[in-house]
Amino acid sequence: MNSLMQSPDLLVVDDVRKTFQSSQSWLHRLTGQVPPRAMALDGVSFHIPRGTTFGLVGESGCGKSTLARIIAGLMQPDSGSVSLLQADGRRPRMQMIFQDPFSSLNSRWRIDRIIAEPIHAHRLRSGKAVRQRVDELLEHVGLSPADATKYPHEFSGGQRQRISIARALAGEPTFLICDEPTSALDVSVQAQILNLLKDLQAEFDLTYLFITHNLSVVRVMAHQIGVMYLGQLIEVAEQNALFDQPAHPYAEMLLKAVPDLDVEARDLHPIPGEVPSLLALPTGCRFQNRCPWMQARCAETQPPMSRAGNSSVRCFIPRNALAS
Ligand SMILES: Nc1ncnc2c1ncn2[C@@H]1O[C@H](COP(=O)(O)OP(=O)(O)OP(=O)(O)O)[C@@H](O)[C@H]1O
Ligand SMILES: [Mg+2]
Image 1 (cartoon, rainbow, N blue to C red):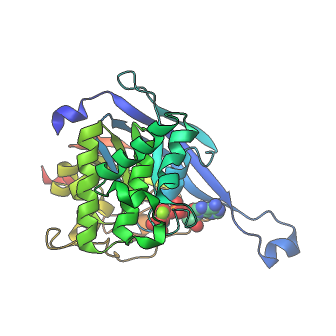
Image 2: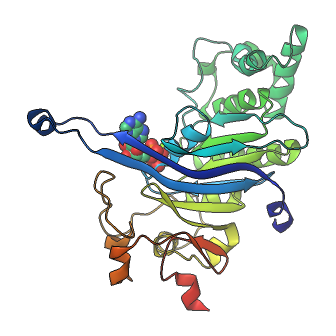
Image 3: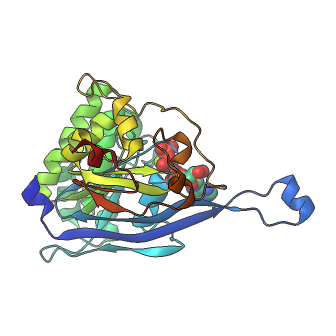
């Protein structure tokens, strides 16, 4: 794992910010005031070495999918940049796999057409070679060439996710964004899809951004993990460092709330305290109102991302520094 982490970066995300206009209420209409903007992403920076997986975890609404959409180029950030770099002469290309394998496949298209779409879009092959490639991709994801003439409704959730993966691979990506790719699936099917993604990563030297709110999933999948809270990364560390010695109080509380990660797939458990609104974020640390170790300066100044032990963390009093 360590040697992989020394590979050159394939993706660099630098200081990405994104706000959304909140909807106009009767009060705004009455007073003519402009409604406030919700701060969905606030200065997100990280990089992913080639051939590795960066796992992104965080509670619902913290900005994971917004970040994924910006990285995929489906949405513009207000500021900041995303760079997909070249690896070994391969053209930098990204593809995305979504959570819901039911709505992400066009139900009126046959499987061969669905999988061939990126091949045509990128003009990767033509004529008979397209169908050959589709058959090959179906086999790569554990389906059969005979499935090419079927329609999405003829498949189970897990099989549909395999089709989504085949379609993503058809675009010959170097980088794959997986936004909760298994959270709609049964636990046993989940494991098969995760294994498939791992095998494909090794076989095709793929780099992944893997979004989940499941700690067991991120533990088996990710080399590095970024923990998000209210539009910010609050801790980034290699997988074992985060699980052995989390540095941010929020990360520590999330991990402690899950007593045994190995028993079965575990979702994030709620931790005490209210999550502030993105429309009215506190000055200082965003976690201050839920933090048992809050001090006066935490309310005054926002902690910058800084190094503590084997983590990068936004906290003045990181937990892992106390232990040593
Ligand atoms: N197009 C949009 N317009 C306005 N607000 C948006 C838009 N997209 C996202 N948001 C808001 O931005 C915040 C982050 O949403 P996002 O979907 O990125 O969260 P998430 O971490 O992916 O959550 P989940 O785990 O539920 O998928 C939320 O408050 C959401 O309501
Ligand atoms: Mg999401």
